[in-house]
Image 1 (cartoon, rainbow, N blue to C red):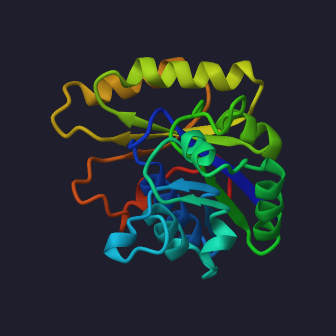
Image 2 (image 1 turned 60 degrees about the vertical axis):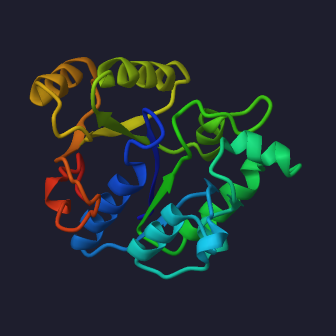
Length: 225
């Protein structure tokens, strides 16, 4: 059985890759194969000898199968800028069907495929397209990563509302605690649980070094793997 999920989030820098790696570790701990894919990535520091985006490398590291960068990252841009600006700069059109073909190939090789988006849910990918449109093309359930920090309730509910308005399927959400000094963390998460009908998959504690090791035990997958 193949299961494919799209990982989006409430913003850039709220830990989509970090959480995706934790979910991948959790899946592997249940003796299932998993591949992480990031079809669109921006930011490759070639002055430091980097040949691929750091997030792409992390997902590839956690994957059950070691794949070529081009297999898991369809579009890569050197500058860490918005994808649609990078694509326009280099006169590239992000082809959703090409991404879907790559995803289908990976899906046939694994039990689970986690596809991480770029930035937040409505990040533009072209003049009239966005991450939301890519999810439409892929037609797969969404896992929403919510960065728990000041303002997270508003950002979260806006994201959830946008997804549901497009009649897309939310599999669940993850609370990723980003601010170690935030007041009433539990109360904020409780407020979100009251307002979001879909299940809370995991509450990831504050992690200063952002390493996903041993955090798989915080995952509570809503269905049997």
